[in-house]
Image (cartoon, rainbow, N blue to C red; front, side):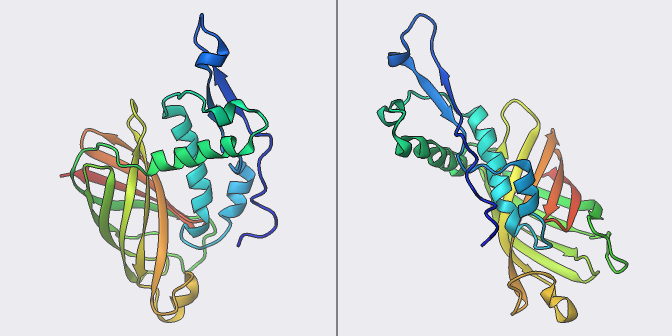
Length: 239
């Protein structure tokens, strides 16, 4: 899909071994293994060089979330398959386990979250681009870290659009920071603007939108990445 060999493995795979003081490495050896296909920053930027709203940005976001999960994950005993340095299958299992951990439900505060846009910039501005999105959105945050919501806004060419979605929040324990990844359906790119987003032949297109943010008490600020086309800042309040 991406072509050009952009997803070639990042070699070598890095494995961090940890031992407990006063114990043999054979009985207490633990490890954390970096994803063998984690893209470099240059590759992430290349993957995002498209006006599509977030669709090709997903590999880079997943790599960032996996890296964050590595730091937050508890150190586990090394399986027998990983102790054998000649076993490639054992090394590949750890990233899959981390991906499952990131997707797993996590206890979270339940409630409603209302938000609005306050600033937008286009990375390649054109004379007909609109930087006043007038976004108003409402999200329902579940107690398992998943969410669903809807938003209405004016797209880059000024017409009213709608986005209905579901997603997941990722809290960084001990900090006010978080990340969010949503996926849903986007409506509003019609007529001459129909081809400005992919898969929009029938007027409704899929969208994947990541964001990073910070929260102080009940107020939140999120930087929303719209692929390589634009970035938007939203401010919200937990009700």
